[in-house]
Image 1 (cartoon, rainbow, N blue to C red):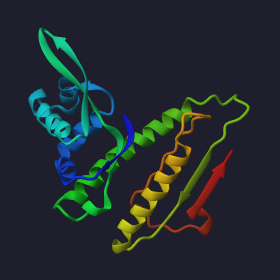
Image 2 (image 1 turned 180 degrees about the vertical axis):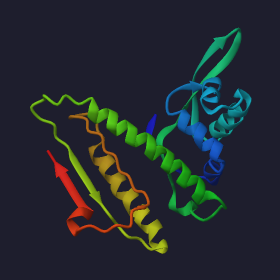
Image 3 (image 1 turned 90 degrees about the vertical axis):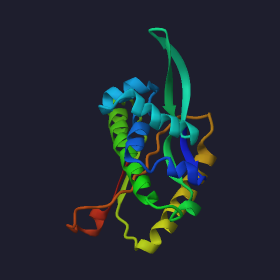
Image 4 (image 1 turned 120 degrees about the vertical axis):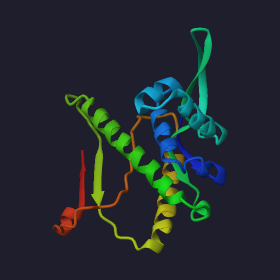
Length: 198
């Protein structure tokens, strides 16, 4: 499974326009059968298979194995990536695209936060060194600036992953989150730019 899959084709973006399909994709973060996903979502295996088939056709999901259940072959599927980024040139070209992208991003963000919590909880606190850094800040974007910001952020992260994504050295997890702020309370300037490192 790749960390990031860049969606370049309209067909790929259109495959995510249905909220149910986004939910199926989230469930396939780990290898699962359509029956297993259906049980979690409270849907029929046939309906889930319909969505999975469309996601496979779009190149967003892979069949990673197959098993026999009561003499019937059952596919095991997994999402092709942990995160999906939309190519800037696709934005605005088809209706409903923004909503689908937002649903996918927010669903992934919730999963990511749980993963980060589990990773941190599993760290050995008695280790002589626990190098880490935390950064929290607030930005303000006009509607017409949002795409430029996302494009610049994507380019910066691509550069970092390219330069430091080799197999040598100690492994570190890098998680970036950007989401709408709902709390209107304003604190001191220092509260808006909190950093900590060890």
